[in-house]
Figure (cartoon, rainbow, N blue to C red):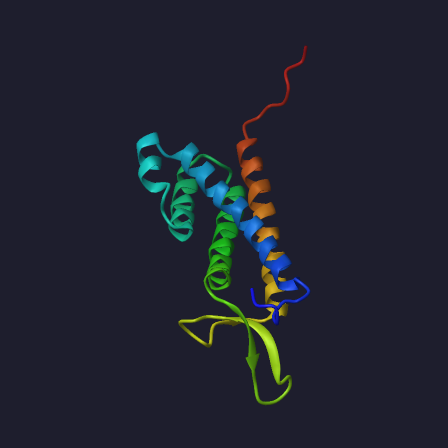
Length: 158
């Protein structure tokens, strides 16, 4: 990274938080596929892009016998993750740069898409994406655990 942008590593810290959160989301999609698909199907689908895996997990969770309230919120969280993944892809595949503007401010650091200059992320947006990504990752993990415990009757009495 060039020395004249992110000199205080504020951007790098938030980007790191986003990627840690998405690591958890990626892992969760693989766990769901491993549990809900047969071994052969998983072998052929595990290399799919995250968006495709999320769509598959959404289809698979409806086939499982979880409580409707849990599956509905799990599916909504997966849809939120898919939407956040679009922002994550802009962050992952484009540079942080110093953009010059006419007006106030004259310049600012942004992440700007190479392919579409209208796709840009400001620092404030990056903060929101980091917070949302962490929240969605945590909520997905919690909901998956709750779904797995639906039939649990507790520890046996000794």
